[in-house]
Image 1 (cartoon, rainbow, N blue to C red):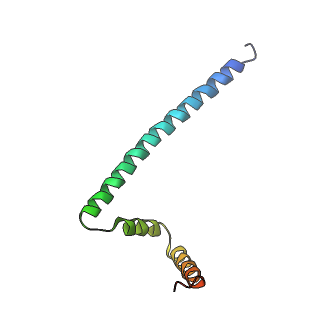
Image 2 (tube, rainbow, N blue to C red):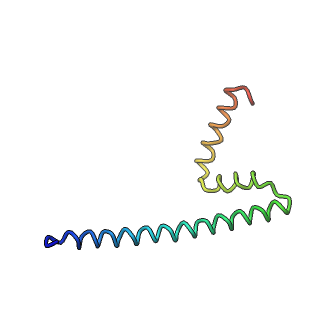
Image 3 (cartoon, one colour):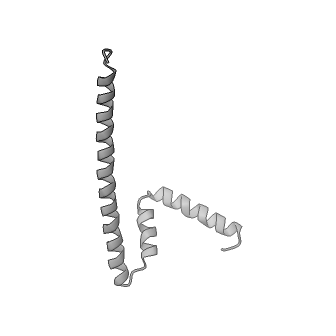
Length: 85
């Protein structure tokens, strides 16, 4: 087209294709990392470690001390409210 629409669409399509390809590569890397993490948990389990507890520790270590303390306080409050502690 003489108004340059094809050029703009071509550029946008090319950029979109590059984004999609990058996302696909990252998804492949993410899957590989997930498999590696699963293997590490499997190794730990085979040595007698409780992987559910390990996952909880990993989740908690992502938080700072204040966030962990607030979460624990809420957990204690909720448990007390339902008569569990």
